[in-house]
Image (cartoon, rainbow, N blue to C red; front, side, top):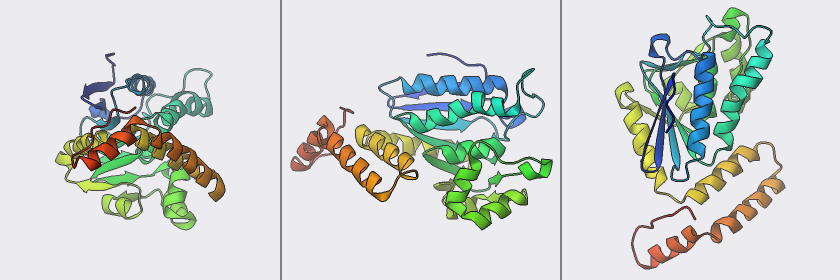
Length: 260
């Protein structure tokens, strides 16, 4: 397994854990960390035994956003930096078969908040805040934050949150559907890993299909989603896991899914 300069990668049974590892800067994103995170996600996506990924962080925060002490490379616009260095991370999370759970131990801001919202599931410290301070420094959100905030908050609340450069307490994030679970900060990682362990025992093909269906549904009509569900159902019913589920039900035992 590859080692990285700014992220930590480990695996246990069907779960991989990736930790952002620049705690001295609240895990602010440098060019190296963007590269490392993308490569770690790619490596995990190619591990057939891994079914769930926990994306966490060392230290007291998930990420403070971009490291403002490091600008784009010479001749590189910020637009190209976002498209070339950040977008591959986000598209990898959305496209990989594994479920990705964000584990947020504290402050999460800027493109770090966008990354958290883009994961499939999330666990947040109950004393954490999500900060969207772009307009405080005359900027706009990035990392697709506008897309996620609009869909969860509605136009006017999203506009106010962004325009005022404010912060959302963890409880409000949960109420708006931006995160799933709230726990004390010291329990964030253990809760996320326990959840990952539970999900890893469920039928992998079914969860893969659910992820794809939900990721695509926002850009589809009702009929297109109906058709996609029908196709996915056909895939699932033809799997060995579906047969195992039926056998386990008849034998009154828990199914053991192989992902086939």
